[in-house]
Length: 393
Image 1 (cartoon, rainbow, N blue to C red):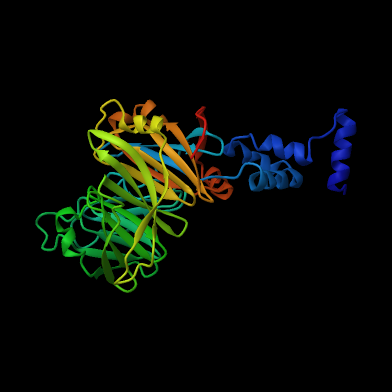
Image 2 (image 1 turned 135 degrees about the horizontal axis):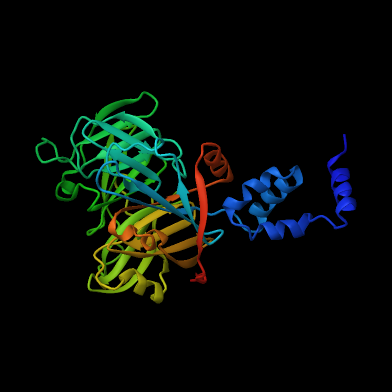
């Protein structure tokens, strides 16, 4: 049997052309959209290595922005658009209709977790492109707008309780290993008037869930395994910030804040939360960067009124948008203290999603995820390429 070098030499002699390999091949592959690299992996072992080397050294994979639009009535048809910042392109994802559950409307109160909650069932998915859905009975307490987060091997469901229930601050956790529900310590009483995903922002670091009130910045942490709440902590950077949301960068908690007032937003900034999360801790917010002014205008949109923003985070990537004006999403990659901003026109809105319910998240996508998706009859169609230039701050 001929060796791989002999095989390529034979090809060269047959075709009369020199084969593409080495640095040249890797450079070419660095410009190929990620979804188009999947079949390239099957060409040969050398091309497989070239893809891996190109992704490792020339143009690495970056977390995808995931936008889901769906109808509010059964059967809750869902369309998925994903923005790949490495390729600077939108990808439309389709899957067999029988794959995704339709127990209720699609929701998300945490960056990478999607869920559907009805009075009888809970369906949830937390892999990068949501190939797998898990199913459980509904929690014991009836809820309409809870915060839901994956913390370790627990799904935490807190607040958002129906009016006829006794405890508006009820917390339940679903153990993924035992597949059972447990009742936990209720949310702190100070959150009684704001215990819904509308008023609270959620971030997860390690085995703790951080719950921040968007207006005040008052924050509490919950540890599912210890069944304990800690706080309050004040994460409002200063009095000029009228609304904040939290998120995570690697193992750090960050906050994004609107400076000014709803009718006149002056700026959007990011801060890193410094200090230890202990019972008597005093935390401080250290400014990381500020969104470029031209992007702040896009966050305002045509209405100009920004009551709050939404933020999805994973790894080194942050995506920020105005839920009331979702035509643009602002991406920020933060590496070694350097912030690279990019404005992304929301392809889901252009496809008519403005008139539907919209859920925005983020996925730490890998080649293995795309390969698995194709094997399971998902399709990935390359769409609009983004031409906006990154701005470094």
